[in-house]
Length: 521
Image 1 (tube, rainbow, N blue to C red):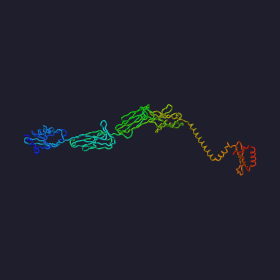
Image 2 (tube, helix red, strand yellow):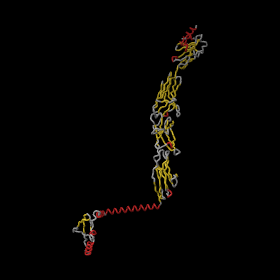
Image 3 (cartoon, rainbow, N blue to C red):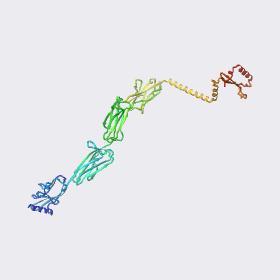
Image 4 (cartoon, rainbow, N blue to C red):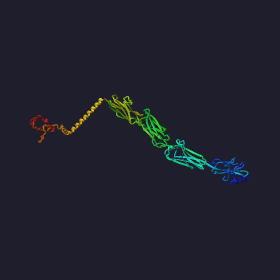
């Protein structure tokens, strides 16, 4: 009876003789269970399920094989239950019920099996991993982003980016099993959360994997080292800064030693600025301190800076002179100190600091420090100090100021006038001597009597210049071992007093000794 009823029901299904035919779609996930409902009004009729014309389940399960009866079953309400869905379970299922009067009600249901997204992977390379799993790349490098997943029957993939400065932005999207793209010369603006998103196009099931990406960068320049004087003039401040880095660098201050020993400074800190204090007892001339900056993007090259301490050394004129009522400017220059020394002017042996006023004008132009004393008086005479101090030590330049009175000033003017007058007379005498150089030279010859003092020349004045045509007689004698030539020149009498002149000349020649009437040649 039952067998004949089933055959009749099956025949009616194949020939399409059914009432109330409908079509529904059911999605099932791979490996899960699915329930295909059967909406009939068969009352006490028998429920049966067919797929592709093949009976898969019935309320009389004896008609099914053992393996199928484990995966397929009919619920009390007539629905088909499928356990452990497989892709092969996809297809069109038909349910129906038969009545005693041979009437069949059937319903068509399409089953689609979906899976995924599964095995989702996201890669960013080249990148390094921090202990907390965060990735970091170097600023300016080319970075590859790759995402892959498995879905059935199909999927869509996309890369999204979100940061504190921007909302969620899609960087790339596509269909298929994988998606990749590159960013050339990546910048810090790409620092944030990068997510790979996969979505099943049929089930709309979504899976994602997010990665925190940091963009590290360090400047090409070295850290900046500075040394200054603290609030206390004996306190040294060492400041090392290295801006423009991400993340924060590690800065390390250390004393450079030429010999073995313990440095007075050896400290480090994870920051872009490191300031340390040292006192005067820890410092000395030529001491060098080095600051080294460490950053993942600067390794293995070392970035550092250094400072070498120099004591002050003021220089200038040690003595100055001024006149009463005038103004005088004392100057000193200090260029060698590091850190830069503080320079002040002081006076008297007690070194009283000079306060700027109408009497004292203090100015600074680069490394030159000036003190101008107005309307000088005798009380301003004394010692002034150009005092330079930095954390290493204090050095002073002593300047002695001499103040002269107005009378001294007048005497100076007179002295200057006399000196100029003497120079003028000398110049005049020189010019006169040059013009009479022939006579001076002749006089010099006559004046050389040390070895020829016995050569005597007797010059006789003449009232008129006459030209002698007769030869002059020369007498050669020997006296004191020297040969002496005596030349006698006779005066030619004039026409007015010829007789008187001859008489006087002859008398003079007879009475005088030979050496008085003769002149050495």
